[in-house]
Length: 341
Image 1: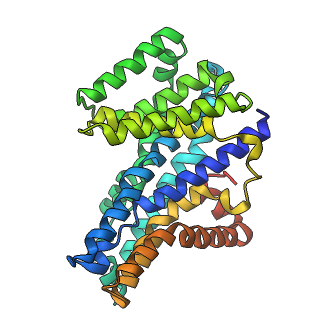
Image 2 (image 1 turned 120 degrees about the vertical axis):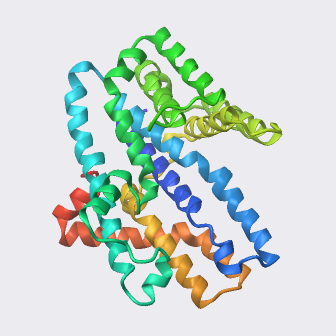
């Protein structure tokens, strides 16, 4: 496919994954309904979307990040790759964690708002601030960026293994077996490592397959993989770690292969603010859900309606907020968005 088509497809997929991530953090049945019988139906619908459908999002993010990092990679490009990720990952990670911390500090001291926040009075001191920035204490959705930073730092080791076709394949099998057997390593999530390494391997050895021009036969292969993924998930009686990781790996790959790049319209501006959407959505989701639950509690239809429409509301708000920052505070925008847009 053409480079413009490849980039446009990336925008579409990152936007899709961003929308799905919003659903994973928008559960509100208990907030609105408590233990009412009606809460069970709302709970089941929300958790089907959030715990099954939307769980392909973060693996998809890891795979896109890895593929872009290792696309046309050489040892000589390592320094440039690391430097670019300082702007696009490390600085936004620290800045957003600091912003969330200060936001909670202020909100926890304001009447009424503190009830919505529900965390008591947040201490304002250097130790708490450092912990919040380093360990994303008040911005826990940034666990993804924390894992991504670790994976980026591991680039020399990963590339050293994955650049060799057969050695790399053995390495991927080893990670998969470790996940299936329940092994753990400090700090780094093995499933994140697996998603990232698979995409890195594809960038190094399968670029022609990943970026080939779509045709009917390709689409049929993607559809077959998608159907196999669904059958694997729903007919496997025990959802082991291995089965879960396989499902969350296969679905994004199947969607990429299924969807023809030449039929995707050019991504709209509001579809390109995906990192900013990811960074801001959690605060907006919590504020909307908690405020609505306080004002209008006890309505199953309202709870479900807010949940289903949350990606739309959050996308609109984040786009206009981002557009405002981009126009009137361009330096701040570049820092917060990682100099992406």
